[in-house]
Length: 431
Image (cartoon, rainbow, N blue to C red):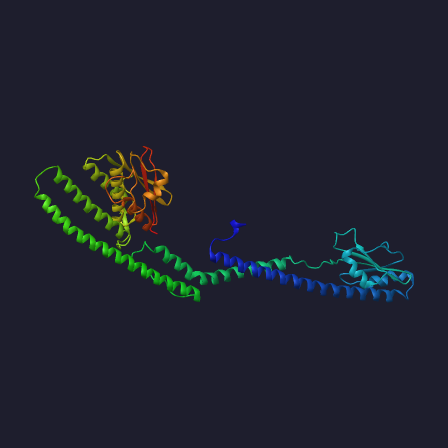
């Protein structure tokens, strides 16, 4: 039963409206049928009683030989009447369905079903008359018209279709603001320009839309303030870093100078990655057709030029809607992550998975334990020993943010070589 229950609010309201009104309709039809059946049956019994009484009066003064002809002359469509000296039925209680008819025709009336006809579709009876019995048969069904005859079924089907059509239109009109509210909520964090929800519909929905718009504005201001603050800190930090780099340049060549230069480069990389993480999904970069295979080939070539064992294995051209700069930044972080924390060889692949494309970056390092994979994608988290060393722990977080902003996802698995397999799932069509 739970599988038949609609998941959407619109479907549930429509089902409840349809079910409730159909039950009301069936109940009213049942009451109407019962009343109609009772009045129809009463009228039929009254006519039958009158015809039988007329037949008794007609045959009373006639000789016995003429009585059957006179009784038959009174027959009408729906009842055939004869006179007979002997009753065709034994003196016993009538069937329950004919008890009311027997009571109306008199205490001596005998009623039963005609054994030659279909059960319940023909009545055979007799009432005492002058010197014999008035015998009659009638093609009469005492249970009358049932509530599921063709007319009732047609009426219910027509009403169900009408109720369903009206319910769908009304429910869509009522739940439209809720759908727009859900769509706007889903775009938070993906769309860099928040879209206010129209405040229309019932009072409760308008109040929810107003509260959502206010919340969206507050979140937008908080994110802008945080981004501006970090950008200012980054700018302020780059000035003393530049002075340090200049002063280091005057130091004599040696191990200390090399270490200081490496520290300065790492600090600049940390600042750049932090800003990339903050800006991810909020830089208003348009979605355009881009060659994903070309991006991976470029990343593999750049890493190979630096002496790393990195190669791309996949189709030569894969075009899909992307934010190209953000995609290159996310994939570059995955490749850097594999080079920094894994071991060669590092392989880049593209696989087709239904409506999604899977970009795989695998290495042969120590990998990440399954229990730690979700925590590894959190920002500023460095695992030990698989993720120990330099960096700020934002490589996987930046890739995951890009995936979520693109209506995709990031998965971490164990590669065939035993290291880490990062799978970036992206939709073929823009969401």
